[in-house]
Amino acid sequence: MRNLFVCGILILAALASSCGKENGDEPKKPNPSTSTHYVKTIEWGYYDLDSNGNPEFYGADEFINFTLDNQKRMTKISGQYLDENDALTTGMEINIAYGKGTAVVTVSIEDEGTFSIDCETNDKGAITKATIEDEGIMLVEKYEYDADNRLVSATMGMEGDGESIPDIYKFLFEWEDGNIKYITADMMGEATTYEHIYTEENNPYNIDYTFSASWAELPIILSIVQMNDGIFGEPNRSLYVGCTDYEEDNFKYSFKDNGEVSLCYDDNGYALRFICF
Image (cartoon, rainbow, N blue to C red; front, side, top):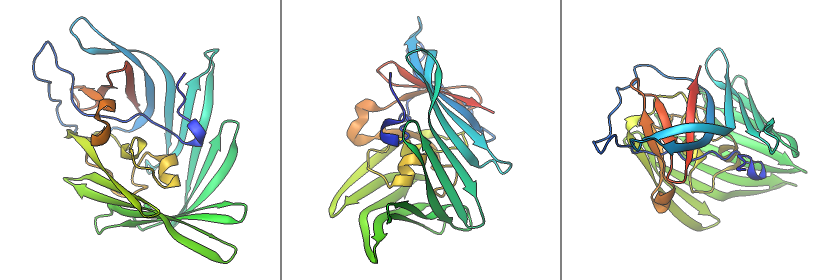
């Protein structure tokens, strides 16, 4: 049984580009979506190929559920899975309470307890600072955005006992054609750059899942929340594919006529299906 909640971090599958071909023809391009589709549940399961070689979803055992407020912001992300007795079990729950210039992210992890992350936000609702306190030591993450509210950098440091250790980890985000093209992770002086791939199609959903599968180690709150509906600034324009260093893990998409994703799947039999409100 795969579990989305390894070590208390919400791990979602990478989403990828490349529609499936139909009967050997070129992939059918979907009509562009004329409205935003709000995701209620992401089902994670399995697929088989039908007689025409097209993917066909046949069952899920993990689920990510979303609750939205009257401004259509994420207020809860709940991860559930079927245990060995096929009982639906909650593995992790994230609640987000918004204030004026603030947000509190409360994380409850199965068998691990609950902790909170205190956040400051800019005038567009994007997190600019996140603080996590543990036994008198505070982990402090700071996020910077450009004039278009696109995330350009994140740093993580430590404060406590009158001392401060800034920028233990630093991350730089470079944008291209409306998407985060490169993430450079600098871990105490050792920097690695990861190149990301996207579809040509626009993302039709209210959430952006680039961070769910980035191969760069990420700051804590990004690693936990991962879904971006504006809480980490401007979302990526397109559907996320994967990382060029790990292309064997990329997914393929099939589309509905209205531009929604019919199925997201890989070469190992796993698939994601999106259920909207």
